[in-house]
Every structure is written in structure tokens, then in C-alpha cells.
Length: 466
Ligand SMILES: Cc1ncc(COP(=O)(O)O)c(C=O)c1O
Image (cartoon, rainbow, N blue to C red):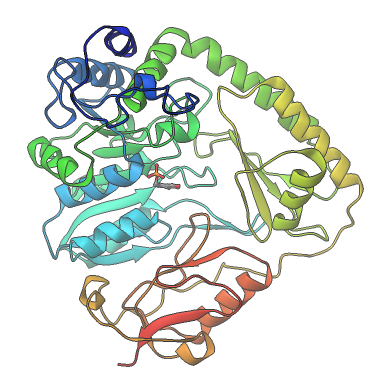
């Protein structure tokens, strides 16, 4: 695709078509790739009815991930999640959802008037992190709710924890229910012996993979992979055309093509090099005194996610990330109350891993031991639901301070950002526990996002009284 794109854009065809910049780099400063930017023109196929060059690229993805259908996504994993959930449910259905799902899953629930039954992931007490979905919890929920129409979980999680997909798929199939896996952080799975298997090969029916998150593809590139008799492909295509642009970027799609070519040709070498860099890094930081780097070398953890715990130190995760930014010129993926995450990939260089290990060793020397992590989310409860999110859609409500919201029904989401478990979802009752959790996260300078108004000095919640 990239070669075809280059030939076309270097050629003499005059573009009386979109995009409006007409590849006229003289008017613009030329630093953005205008000269390569086209959308669907004659000979370049159609994303929503791929039969030519786009379908060829998708076949490469099918080969790479060993699935029946792979759809390129140019609007991120988000559009795959919205389309996928809509395709496997009917309006008003009940679905089983892991509470730690990304907000796009919550948006799919609202748009499709779904009733969610939530399951909480397990919790790691040492690192204060939610981890995996237990297949027994899935089974219990499916037994108790015979009308559940789909199961949606996130695996790996943002932190890299991988659920027992084989078990969860088999339980779901016992009830004739498809398993949708948000594998946005696992596009590098199944491509080498060093990382967990991808969910489709373990029995998941449909999975979304965020190529841009852990593989060399441009931001927004993702895949929706399918291997199942339970998924109606025509319906899925229709829903993709609802949620995905009708003017796909060939720069984005070519970056996926290049990514697949690279992997098909060189994945063994690239993953081996990546693995060796990671092993060396984990070895270099194994004797830290106060900071702790999580390591679990089995098929239920993506050890390309480097989790650094500050639980036993006198600083928070956010403070550690500030130190690394200001003193060592290192920008991490995210920082939370008791830990930080560094994201890595096959494109990282040895020097990068060395920078991080040296910085952690130096920082550790200046720390003292302390029990710093005041927040324990272990006992987090899911707030009582009075309405589904779609039932609250047209209620106006009032915006009141967090303290005054006690006992009211939320009309918005409050998330700790980056992705985590929502503290409250529209339609749920704002209890004392919710208020206390929000306050303690705020105390630790965790970035909180509400869906209606930004959290500035105080926290205000749009809500209504029953
Ligand atoms: C678990 C998970 N799923 C889905 C998404 C959405 O991905 P995208 O930003 O590519 O739309 C994210 C984004 O961070 C995520 O963390």
C-alpha cells in the first residue's frame, strides 16, 4: 500500500478531489506529510467494503494473528469497541462487563441502552493494583443472569495483567455467549514465545488490538480481529461504518501495512532483541532497596509493562514520575498514587532501558522506607445502580459540590485518569464510600476526569435527587 501511495502521490495525476490541502506543500511549511495524504480515490479500495489494496493489507493481519477476519481501524481501538459491542448485542440487552473497562465500553453501553452486570478484577495487595478477571466470577454471573448476551473484558489491563482467556471463553461458550476482549494493550501478543498468547487463539470470539500502543504503527491505528461462528460479520461491517470515518487516512493505513510487513519478515529478531533488553533491565533493578519493580514471568503478565511501585517509599508514584521527568529527562506512560508505568516495545533501544535503570537506581539511593500508600482499593464496592446510563441521558440535574452530592444519583462518570475503574457511572448513587475514594485520590494529586465539567479546585458532580 505504501508503495502504491508513493507512486500515486509522486505521479502526475492532478487531484480534483479531497483532501483540501491538495498536497500543496508550498503553502504549508512542509513538515507534516501532506504530500502523502489522500483518502479513498480511484484504485485505492474502500475501507467499508474492502476488495482491493485494503483487503490485501487486512489479509496480512489475518495471517499474522491467525484469525478469520481482521479489520483495520483508523479511529483507534475506541471505534472497534463501539462497533463490536453494538454488533454483538441488541438494544436493551444485558451484558457482563469488567468494571475496569475503558470508557469506550461504557459509551457503548449507553449508546445501546444496555444493562451492565459488573465483575471486579482481582487485586494485588503488594502493588495495590487491580489485576485479572476470575473465570469463576464470569461463570457465577452467567448462572445468575441467564439473559446475558455478551461478555466484555479488558485483557491485558493497562498495567499488563492477562486474564485466563481460555477458561473465560469456554465458560462464555457454555452459555452460548460471545467473548469480546479489549486487547488494546496486547497487539504484540502471540507474535513471539516471550509474550502471552493473543486472546483469539485462546478462544475469544472478537478482540480489539491497539497497534499504535505497543507496535510500530501511527497513533490511532488499531485492529478488530474475529474468529467465531457467534459473530455476524455483515452486522459487524455495518457497525464499523457507523463508528468509523468514511475518509480513512492512507498514511495511517500504510503505517499498519509497514508494521505488518516488518513483523512478517523480522518479528523473531525484533522480539528476541526486545526480550534481551527487558531481561537486562529487570536484572539491573532487582536490588533496589525501596522502589520495587513488578515481575511475574508467566503467561498472565506482559512484562513489557514496567510497573514501579513506590508503596514502601516516602514518595508517591506521581512524585517519582516528576523526579524522572525533571532530573533524568524520562517521560513515563502514567503515574498513580503508589506506582508508575513505563511502556516499552520492540522499538525501544538498549540505551533507553539503561537510562531508566540508572535513574531508578540513583533515585532509590535517596529514598527512605515508609508505608506511603494510604489508598487501598481492595474493598472497592460497585455503587448501587438506580438507572442504566442511557435512562439518565436526558435528565438535566444540577451541579453540586462533592460533599453535597451524597445520596444523589450521578449524571456523569468520574474516572481516575489514565484509564482505571470508574468511581461512579451515570445512574449510580453517590455514597459516602464514593466520596471518600474521590477525596483520597485527589489528595494524592491523581488526575480525575469528570465527563461534564473539569475537576479544578473543588470537585462538582452533576447529579439529581431521586
Ligand atoms: C484498555 C483500553 N482500551 C481501549 C482504549 C482506547 O484506545 P484508543 O485510544 O486507541 O481508541 C484504551 C486507551 O487508552 C485502553 O487503555
